[in-house]
Image 1 (tube, rainbow, N blue to C red):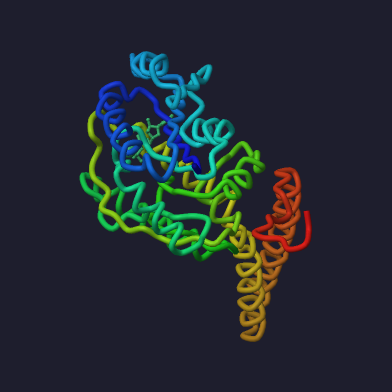
Image 2: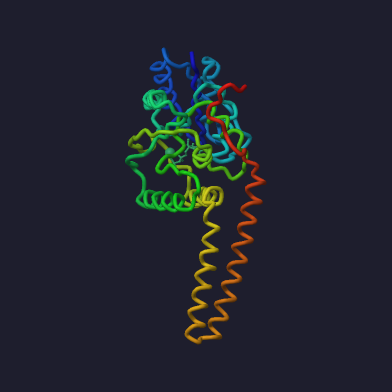
Length: 298
Ligand code: UDP
Ligand code: MG
């Protein structure tokens, strides 16, 4: 039987653990004739009793695994730790607060098989109990990222995704520190499809992302994936140049000369930016490509 690993990073989610485990047992039961399901919990340096609750379950159930990280490394890194230990044919990432309901996973698996693809992105139709600020900022963020990214960007989808071992191994091979997993999965380029759902509010507790942390996540995403952003500087340089020519044409020589110097400076900054972009791409050492299928080759 094929295997599915459910990766669950968590940080101080004590109140959610028991209802979550109940849902996960239901999931295992629903899929018992189709998939052998394992749960990989990653404790991201929690200071509450959540890990202890899971540890107790580990002793009775071999399919429940627990990784305790040495401290809080953040959601993206904790998820990566889970992926590193995932060996199944399929992997799905969920949050611990039941905002990504495990009972949707069988349907996502069905869609993956029917469409013969590698990734199913769970896309949020509605976001319940989220502030207007978060909804609007998420919308603006995805729009801008889409404009400035060379690669396709999946909008309104968090980390709730089901994917094949090929995708998981591709993601595992990318080891950059400023991680933005959604971007990495999109970047890997494997054929994907969507599953639309209404994202409910948290089961209990509070969001672990402060507005500042969300900003840092968005900023990391831009730095890593909005690779066209640097060309904006060159466009500004060009606009300055045109402006300086217009000024000179109208005999505003001093102003024209100043704007011309500005154009050259902006161009120089853009050029340096492009060199740095290329250097940073090389230091990230991302694989050059991933293979979907091969014929008559090992
Ligand atoms: N999380 C984590 N480490 C952190 C912050 C969050 O592992 O430093 C986990 C958290 O416990 C949850 C998931 O990441 O399982 C998503 O976090 P949260 O629900 O707070 O984010 P939101 O849904 O509000 O975007
Ligand atoms: Mg949440």
